[in-house]
Image (cartoon, rainbow, N blue to C red):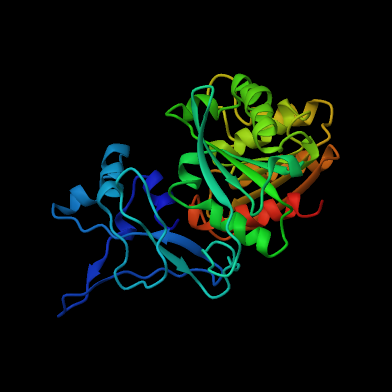
Length: 333
C-alpha cells in the first residue's frame, strides 16, 4: 500500500531502510492514519543500492518472489500462492473489524467440493445442512476462485456468516481463471454469458441455487470487480446483485478510451440490479474511477451501496470487505 505509488512513479528510495548508527538494526517509519490496514513484507537485498532501487516490472516481480513476512508480527499472516511467502498484516487501532475472516471452532461447518464445468475448474462451498431438494438457495459466484478457495479459505468466512445469521443459506461457486484472467475479466460478454447460461443452470441442477436473479450475487476484485459490475449490466436476468471490490473501472486504456463500463451505465436503460462497490483510499489509480461510477449509478437511479476503506489493492482488506458485502447484498432478503 505505502510502496505502490512510488514504485509506479519509479522511485523506491523513500522505502529503503537505514541502519541505526552503532547497531545492527535497520529501520523505517511511516506516518499513517489510525484506520489503516495493509499486508506487507521485507526484502533484504544483497546487491548495490542501484539494484535495490530498480522499479521495473521484472525487478519488482523478483522482489515479490523472495520477500518475507515480518518475523516479529504475531498476527496470522495473509497466505500467498505460486510459491511465494505469506505476508504479514498491519492493522492500526481504528481499522474496521474483520471478525468473520478467521476459522472458528464453535460454528457448524459447510462442505467444500471440487468440480469441473465445461472444462473449467470450480470449487463449491455448501452451507451447513445443505440438501439439493431443500432449496432454493441463494448463490454467490466468486471470481478468481483459485485464490478464494485453496489459498484464502473463503469457506470459513461463509460458515461464520451463516453462524452469525448474517447470510441466508447460500451456495458459493468459485470460478478458477484457468490462466485466462485477462481475457475473461475484461468485460467479456462471452465469459459472462457462459456464467449465466452454463454455470448457473449447472448450480441449480446440482445444488438448488441460482434460479432467482434477486438472490444471485457475482463478486470480484480488481479486474474481477469490473467483471462483476459488467455481469449485472450484461445479464441482469441472471445476476441481480454485484459486489465489486477495487474494480478496474479505468478499463480499457487503448484507442477506445477509458471507463467504458461507466459510459454504458450512463447511457443505457437502467437495469433492475443492486451494486455494492468498495475501493481503497490508497488506490490512487482506482479511487476517482470508482467514485465516478458511483455518481453515475446514483444519477441513473440504481440501488448502489458504496464505501471507501483506508487501504490499497490488497486481499488483507478485500477478505473483510467480501464478508461485509455479501451480508449487505444477501442478508437483507
